[in-house]
View 1 (cartoon, one colour):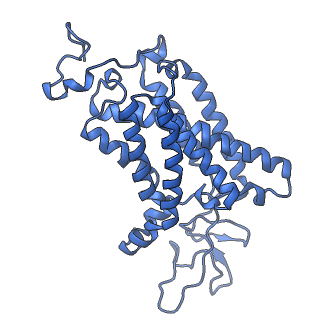
View 2 (cartoon, helix red, strand yellow):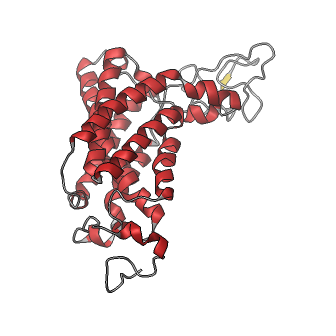
View 3 (cartoon, helix red, strand yellow):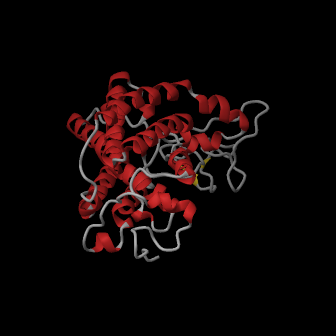
Amino acid sequence: MEASADSDIPAGVPESKRWLFEGEAPPLPRGIWGRWPALTFVLPFVVYMLVGMFEPGPPKTFQPAKPGETPKVGKLGHPIGIVGEDGLRRDADGHVIDAETELDENGYIQMPYAYYPRVYTIKIIATVVAMILVIPGYLSFPLRLNWIGIAVGVVGVALWIGICKLGLEQRLLVPLGLGSLVDMGARTGFNPLEQLKENPSWAYQFLAIRLLGLAIIVPIIEEFFLRGFLIRFVMDIDWFKIPFGRVDKLGLITSVAFPMLMHPGELFAAFVWFSLVTWLMIRTKNIWDCVAAHAVTNGLLGAWVIWSGDWWLM
């Protein structure tokens, strides 16, 4: 879509949407980052998510069905994860497995939980490489911070922890038959100080890597993807011409709905927290304030988890 001759508003934009383009959008950097503007916002996030698909979670422990309950059986009719009448333990596909084989929540064989630190470390390295490749795109947004972003981050962590501890998802959604949705959002809850206690050096190294990902990497890639790209993309195909912080109803819905889908196990906390940061985005119109708020919340969350032992929050 070409820009009109007398303004920066793309030609063909209906009158009802012209206000979205009023103001100055972040300039496109030179080179490949300008030719493909989505690259800056999408590449690191996609790398992070793709590698994260291989992260193993805590193994599922299956128990024999209680009286009146229907036993969980696999494709061949054998009970999953427990010793059957034939004296054998099987996975959901009916394959015979030994007592050490770990199963996921659906009863399928998964990578051992002990491999989580390695996979997570690879994920962070790959994401950092992707971030380095798109630095020119990051620098197209003036690096300035407002104290409001820090304040939002502090308030946000209190809201996140408090709402998560209420367990509203278990209380309200599980009775509606949405337990599988809630389970999809379960955190890995890997405690390196416990799981890696036999190797203290690696335990603290991985803890540092985990906090780096939590408080630095994730805030940058998530905010640039969600607020820098996705919210603007759903508003118009020429999204990169929309000034940051300008948002319509569809953008507002996206700013909350997408994060809620990404955090099904913390649905209500995600609704409140991301709504708060969307307000910050509209208030300061500065993506780095959103990154700062996210970083403060996640950093304080990490500190809380280490202090309290609530590793289920990570």
